Amino acid sequence: MGHTIAEKILAAHAGEAVRPGQLIEVAVDMVLANDITAPIAMREFERLGVDRVFDPTRIALVPDHFAPNKDIKAAEQCKTMREFAKRYGILHYWEVGRMGIEHVILPDQGLTLPGDVVVGADSHTCTYGAVNAFATGMGSTDIAVAMATGRIWMKVPETLKITYHGRLKPWVGGKDLILYTIGLIGVEGARYQAIEFGGPAIAALPMSGRLTMANMAIEAGAKAGLFGFDEITRAYLDGRATRPYTPVAADPDAAYVHEIEIDVGQIEPQVAFPHLPSHVRPVSQAGTVKIDQVVIGSCTNGRWDDLVVAAEILRGRRVHPDVRCIVIPGSQEIYLRAVREGLAQVFVEAGAVVSTPTCGPCLGGHMGILAAGERCVSTTNRNFVGRMGHVESEVYLANPAVAAASAVLGYIAGPQQIG
Amino acid sequence: MNNVLKGRAWKYGDNVDTDAIIPARYLNMSTPEALAQHCMEDIDLSFAGHVQPGDVVVAGSNFGCGSSREHAPLALKGAGVSCVIAKSFARIFYRNAINIGLPILESPQAVAGIEKGNTVQVDLTTGTITNLDTGQTFQAEPYPPFLIGIIQAGGLIEYTRQRLTNSERQ
Image (cartoon, rainbow over the protein chains, first blue to last red):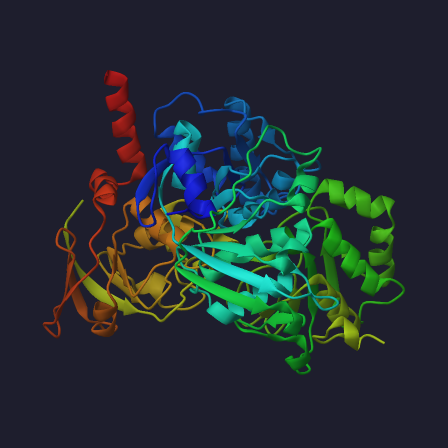
């Protein structure tokens, strides 16, 4: 009997054959935390009574959520993480001014690789499934134990296979595919499962789109969102990978708990309405919903390709007078490229904000919070009640093209509606 | 850990997410006591001020969905919640609760048979849930043996510390 990608990676890291439902302990290749999850992890780490981390080159600490320091308490949390990094010799600590959003910089810097097990104290750790790694979010206590021992307990998930056929329409990308999928299966549709994304439409999808899809696997309840390794993966890792890696493919006779086929040719840009990521409808059925803010960025859609799409729509146009448009490149590298290649100029001339990398408004932290009654179209990943501010505010999730078009028109719109 | 719990039930629906359990604006704090003051604030303003030690949260499916924030079960534990009973749990919340020693039980029947304000008794050893107001009893899904070890130690840190100490002795 063959095995799925998840089963193979976990078996290799557990040192034994595994089957779904089994509780195992795995060795981890990379452990991650950020400024809001690290303080608890550090506090629990100290209670373990160890005097060192398992491997100072295999831990990543990123101040991205409430940084640059949002307020005094956030400053204390960032300080706690900074001091821990120094005390234990953590190699991968990025300071403000040299950092980016964790799930943008880790793959870009070649730290998460095919065949890896990556665990992080952040639910969107599943992003690295796009590079053929088994990557999953956990809590701060889990990460404390992983930092100390290099191992963590885990239940082997079943795998849900989703195959995407056909060719994408204009302006449709990874964000639309994953929103469509979550709309189809629901926020619990893949609970506890690993998703394997594949098919000809995926083979043609650039890495930025795959990272977007894997990023939102958690929003369907999934434990991981895995992609196979192909030429696009190899080309992305070329010049980035920091160590050797071994790609993992599913066996032809692997057993899946369920298989879904999706024809992408029918899919237009999608919008997730408040207050669940599964309340999805095509943008042409959005009606006329006036908005107050647009956010283009985040670990979901803060990459170079996302900025290029947004700039294409904003170039030579103006953000609607009633709208605040906030563009947040996902890393300093992307920000600098946006400056050098004229995208930052396009955004500022259009009347948009260009911010240093931060998670900021995505989780209602800072850099664009909503008042009561306000609505935001956002390229982020969650729209629960109160997610971006007041409990009476609303968040609509979409791709960068829809976000930019909505910023221009002042209501939820697709790029085809721009004159 | 006390194995028989008793308290009043607080009842919620499906998909109670981690932003509802503890809004992100409070994630610049991390102690159970501080977080408890804002627990459930965005979906039930009455909770934080009126929850009594021992009370039980009873909820629908996919409880704790959303973020990985451990602050969510910490807020509930800090508020004195003795147990969460749900139709199903989101996976990161589930492991966080086990890891910090907040008892959680899965039982759709119990959720259907308990209303807000009912007095509920839970026996963690057997997984039996009793609605003391109606007299009905329900059986929750048992924990896998591996997780019982973590729960009996009081949480993942205690469990890991014991194992590290044992391996040092060898």
